[in-house]
Image (cartoon, helix red, strand yellow):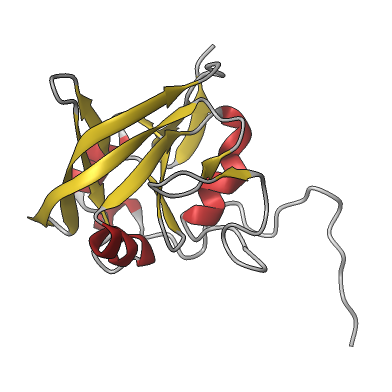
Length: 176
């Protein structure tokens, strides 16, 4: 028996062998994929975390936050128990972190074993990130195949803005 080692950087498959063929994909999901979305990391005490690209912030007194998450995620169980969570916008340097918390990249030792974290009452946030919002859970309900989470923003910490990490048509992008 012998093994063939591909050239460095060579791809074994030119496309994802597990991808659903284009003609079988949901048109709603394909439409959603054409809307650029900010990539955020939601965390809760426990700790638990999840990459979320369906986040909306409404200014007001108080400010509000809406997001769509997986009802079966470890994050939702932790948010439901704690009644609070943190939301951090991710920057282009956080691509692997985003993939790790989305379950697309290995996380030996656990999701929080790598990178530097700042502890907050709402959950750990990436140290040196662009900031974060501390949210109090107001409620949640099934919405499509997701859970629509509604929250009040209780605290905002802002630092230098490194520009957003965006998700568009299944890939990460950055401005500029």
